[in-house]
Length: 336
Image (cartoon, rainbow, N blue to C red; front, side):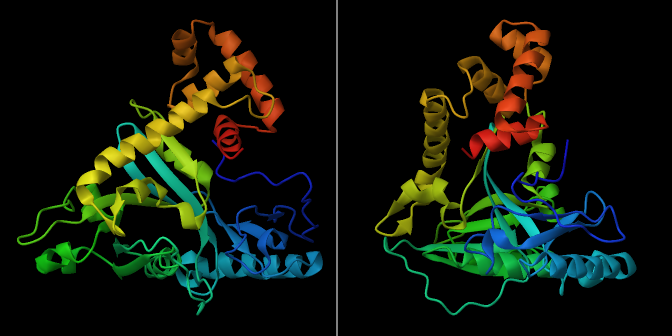
């Protein structure tokens, strides 16, 4: 499964000089996050699974080539561990709202964002207090910055859960706790929501950080109960919680029902949506099965067709959506 999102056909890569493997591209999701938006050139650096898209700070092809070569040399000699604090990179933040089925919203963001003094408007007057547990200092700073750009959100961050455990009152100071799902404390199941005396405990959700959205699909494929991943803009990333607010504040007791209703409505809308990208009903059914984590034989059994017919439909889907992998086809379909 590819870990690199495709370059648009209208955004041809400039020549990268003596390094034929140094491929430059433009990305589609930087609007409102980077000054040059989708006009900026990027280069993919590093080896999988730490291969990241690095923005080069220019829309001029020759400058981009020079910047890419310089960045590639730095990575080769010093590695990401030393350069993470000086070389920006694109990453995908995905929040896991439900476990069975897995239901996530995700957004593309950047490390080392420029400080902003602009006032973020909050026309609905909503207030959401977030506690963030993120071990990596570079990602912790970036996530704190971006989350506080969402209208109505305040965010306090820590490198681990220790302050949370040793100071129980903190459990009443926040509405939501976001914990890196790959952090040792989360993997070991030590970080759970618990009721604090005299107040209501915060809700705990896991999140993942990935080089691209393709890597999210790779990390959750084969989930038995299926999964639903939805790309959102930064301002809409926390949208699944929106119906659980009353008088501007989050009502924790309403959240479980709100989350299930939100994603159930999306499934219903998807079933009722008119054909997207010229896809037939059967082709959309197959994409929905892939989205649920089913393999070709399971899709065939579910739809009452042969595996060969599934393959034929998938070829048509790839052609119509301009996709090369199952993951890419699902991503492009969901983004329409």
